[in-house]
Image 1 (cartoon, rainbow, N blue to C red):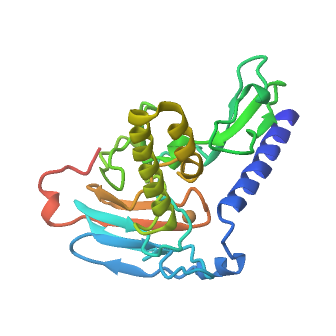
Image 2 (image 1 turned 180 degrees about the vertical axis):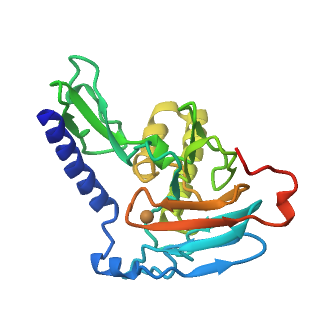
Length: 278
Ligand SMILES: [Cu+2]
């Protein structure tokens, strides 16, 4: 019990540290931008929600605008990150409140393995996996949780499905979801995206290199570029269709204080085909 508390405490510190690194450009003074007043948008054709709109090189906005999107059943809400200076964000719905899943989680090492059994891959010049003690004396490695960093659905059988669409991700809620996550949403022109292009270019160079001269070209050209590719697929737009009326709160898994909601009204047009009572 006590050990467990210590373990979770240590994990919390690690997570806070890593998240602080992740949003190193963030200015805490701007958290005040998240005012309790909710601005509301009502449309007849779904809604668009902008994430971190207005962020620039020195000012970072941690906002979903509008914070409350109102649509009719059967319509779609689309999230985008319009500013190339925005931090990375997710749109995460936890529909089953028993689900807990953080951006960074401990994964146990096999018995008798230690962190030094992990080798650093060539493109990275210096680094080591973060490990922490588990309550039973084992070691755990701290790693990114794919469920948060990739577009994903956790269903009522506890199965995870990773959504297709490398840039534009679409999903229609069917009532079986325990959780739905957008993956990492960034602006289409964000610097991260340029890096992705860089990585793709270097892959091209690699295959050309393989054709001409195997070893040397492969390592040489990949060195600088591969290190910049993010370990997740950057998402430009995340579009969710809501068929069931209700209020759907969501948050950003990277900055859990960022929250928003979708209010789905019982639209006249779509009420014919579906029964709302369970
Ligand atoms: Cu965020």
